[in-house]
Image (cartoon, rainbow, N blue to C red; front, side, top):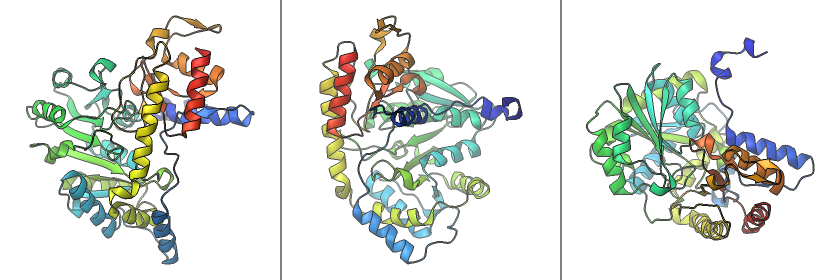
Length: 394
């Protein structure tokens, strides 16, 4: 019946992370003991002080439609957060609250891209960037990186990727899936290239900013000459373990924020009222209130790197943020394991699911077919057991 569907949906890829999570759930339903390391979802409960704020909002009857671009006091809390954590001055008319950072990204694409506009994506990139760009008529231009450069794009690579059709560059730091973090000097190097091309805009996805092990996050909007051409995207899903609450937001030029509000008004309208009220409390809290989660992720990263480092054929870098490792497993390509020929990272991920009962995600979904993504947003016991199983079947 696909001939009755639109070309845009037929041409859209299914999210690989969500597809693997669904497959893992299906296998669990069949009685298999699957350890899921595929989703980017913190395994912590939401801190009680945020839950209490949500309960208070219910008691105060926040049950009506919220403003399309978010409650004014939430936008003020976001503005204060940008100033406190990022050194960025965004007025309330430069901020739009959406139903998760994914909607924020989709809004930006829909209001800024015309058919044929090119968007530079340093690869690996978050799994949905490419299809969000395509849905808006844009053309993703992948810039491949490797483990040798810590999966970061160089200024020379950026310059080489720019054409007269280039409209935007999208990237995340800390990066999903690689965990790589761009330093201030590295961002300045990219900015120097972009200054020669004043019509190119930047989407800086900073959803993992607090899960950062290098001791300081830098926003590219804070680099000289970049403020007026950068849209900073963030949210509360990762640092506050609020994935299901679906609150994301942008800070950027007023004309972009106004356009996103216009589009969102015809698409979903305002985000969930109760979640918005709870987000005010989350953002107003000092980062020290969530430091326990950051410290635990750091500890798990070291554990996972140590255990995977014992497996021959895993080539690892040291991710400095987020909660993923992105090992290069191309040494297994062309080999046969337990009767299964491994041709690429997709074969490898399926092999681990079938033989080790461990769900990971192929790097091909992120623009790097030599790697797999392993999320360590799981308990230490689960991580130890999962890697033990992987080691056993390899």
